[in-house]
Length: 208
Figure 1 (tube, helix red, strand yellow):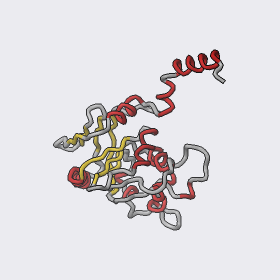
Figure 2 (cartoon, one colour):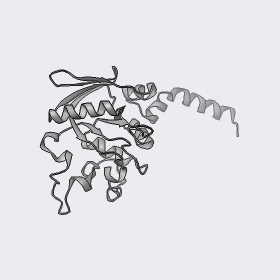
Figure 3 (cartoon, one colour):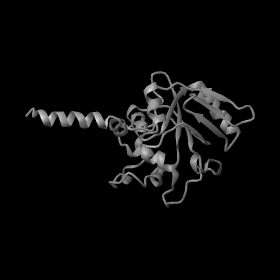
Figure 4 (cartoon, helix red, strand yellow):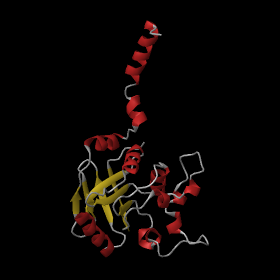
């Protein structure tokens, strides 16, 4: 997968809690055996009306949100089923970063969605409700506002006149994985020489 170091992009607000995987990518789009082409199904039931035309009231259909690559959502994003297709749809639509608040005992992201995002190079940032509320107000006051997300520095800097910034925490192992651009297969292949040596020794000694 592609390494994540920095990303600058437009910020879109989808201020809804408990956005589940059925809304992220509805079941009718799960028939393909490929890992591509899911962007058209992202938030399909919200993005489109019954006649297939774009829903003018849906947040991501607003003109100032076109081309957004940083999404601000409510808590417990990605709850529901374990389908990895949800992360594929979010990434293939163009989002590189999702920001969401931890609220009490409710996490910012559902565990399975979060773990799947790591494997696909999608950065999910957990923040406080206070921070999310502040940046939502900032973006709503500046439609089309961009932000620079720096994973190494663990910092988000908005491109408003005050250069408003937020520091975020992230698990060191998750950070290292994203910076290196290595999913589980890539991490395993780093030990390819040692694995080959072990297999050779195993066959030579004929343990069976």
